[in-house]
Amino acid sequence: MDIQTSEFKRCTVVKTSGRIDGSNAQELAQALKAVTSKGNYNIVFDMSEVKFVASAGWWVLIDTQKTCKPSGELVLVKVDKGIQDSLNLVGMGSYFCIFDDVTAAVGSF
Amino acid sequence: MSTQRFSCSLNNLEKICDYISCCANDAGLTEAEVYAVQLAVDEAATNIIEHGYGEECPSRIDISCEILEDGLKVVIYDDARPFDPTTVPEPEIKVSLEEIKPRGLGIFFMRKMMDEVKYESSPDKGNTLTMIKHHHQ
Image (cartoon, rainbow over all chains, first blue to last red; front, side, top):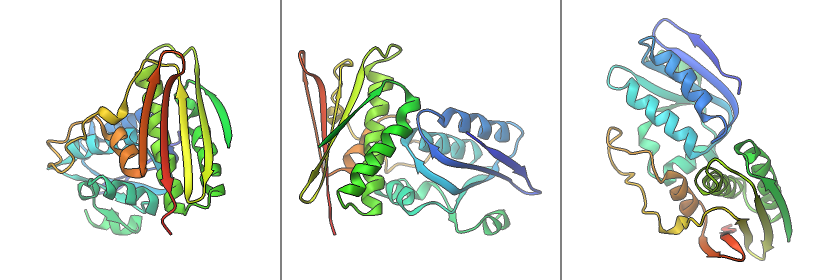
């Protein structure tokens, strides 16, 4: 799993691609933990190249959101329609703010 | 009807999803329906690998796809410990972020994404999970 992390003045952008499932969710968890453990609680997760998120991936993002709030927030960018529909269908869409592009998400902090 | 056998490893989830995606497309499901079936089967396979077989994965996960007049039937066979996902209570989802607990979401996805989910287990045939997705357009 390729995970890129870029630090900006007010937030950190994390990006990966492909699938987030039971086989690799822990890699994402470690990458996000590396960000929050430095005290960076404003995180933009760029999902423009993510094609699939299983429950294992959602728990990582929910756990990270719990860590970030209330000092900061984990926001999502460019979530594929199928992924977003699945999250809304189980009633968890309200846990994340979703932006259409990285610039807007970074600018929100 | 087609059947594929997968060895019991989380690293096979992508292959399983590719196979399911192919079948769902052949069945004429929409893009959203294809994603829904992939997610349900991924969650089912993950459960079998993580909870059914535990540390040891000596056996098989066979997945059959049958194209129906109005959708797709997926049947998953395995020899792991019997585990009926249809009896697991739904997670408490409509709660605040602080209160949500990490359990049962995968099974909840399976139920929400599919129109029918049925589980059977017998000593001679092992576990059989049947899931159906109807084409709604």
